[in-house]
Image 1 (cartoon, rainbow, N blue to C red):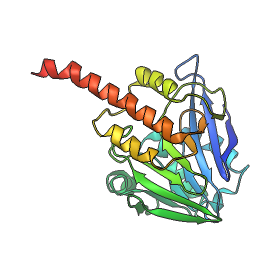
Image 2: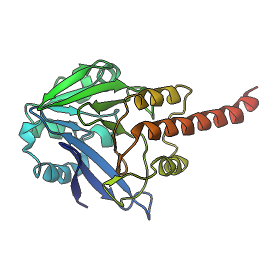
Image 3: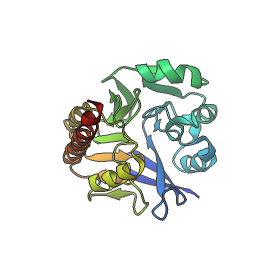
Image 4: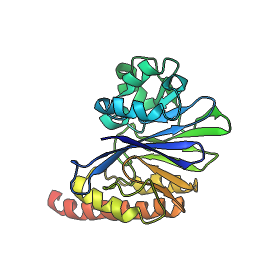
Length: 250
């Protein structure tokens, strides 16, 4: 395995590790993102066992010691498993997440005191880069779930939203909702709940131009339309689940 580096928006880079043994024959990608600026930020640390691969990829962009922020989507091994390894390599970096994530996980897990990000809070990374934290509880899963939106490029760092199989390209302007629905059928990874559609439509109002997927290619195009289509897909699944389960519970 090796970690590939691709620029998906101005000053935003995707570090992608493809694992063919997960869901073969298509395989599965694990992506991290680095937002450059005067205070560079990494979104997702990757799995602890992939740290050496990802570290080797990052040094092609910048010295790890320059990292100032390390954030992630929700508490799970591929999102933050290598947090402490990165903190050791980046002595000036601060781990950051939302209130729930810090209270229930990061305060204990992190070797360095974390920064609590309030819903809607913006971190100015300098050099024109600004990232906004947005709470998305239980969307797609995890009560601590959240995303980051880089305002200057219109890039939404999506976490596990739109998860899909394969490794055919770093970016796409094609359909990402159909492949995400297919992956949902396989993994059933989403915490289906009635609020998912509203949460995704709220993200669509940002009108993102790039959707940075943790598992899959980065999407360039009408991010609002893709998010609204995903909201409709989840609304359909929630309604279907309720119709199946309510009669048997009566």
